[in-house]
Length: 202
Image (cartoon, rainbow, N blue to C red):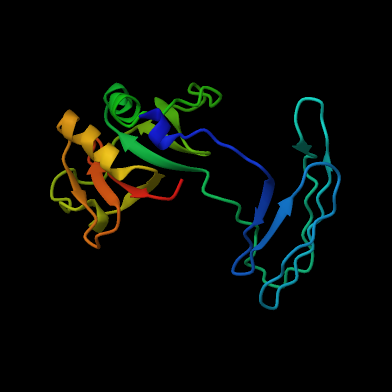
């Protein structure tokens, strides 16, 4: 199941996505030293300067080598991506059994587990994470909508919805399919947190 949610990552080229409000700029970064050309959108002008060096071990971007000038919207603060989603659980071991053994997620061992005053675990979802937190849940566990798409939920992109459906069937875990007919499946973890899995192209 790990291959379904955490497929091997192949990067033929480096890309920088500078999500700045509605005027996001995207550049493709070849290996070696370069000065990329930046696409501008709307009335915003973004000037991106990135320096990269070849390394005998790997091509790496020099840290802190991105500068942005001329942003004329004070609300643009440089959104990059979603970093993680925090999910509350009553019992960490029970939740880990679901997220690891049913969904096939792997623990990010680099994240510290002893720095916070409660138990928890960080799980990889592609390049982002789920942070399981063993804390009291202020939300009611009963009376939630049957279909997770009508509840607050976390959506995970996967490659094969029918395969996940078979895994949930085998484990006896209830689910609902997308009401729109698109390839997506909704289920809940042991603490009734709603999860959506939507199928994307490989």
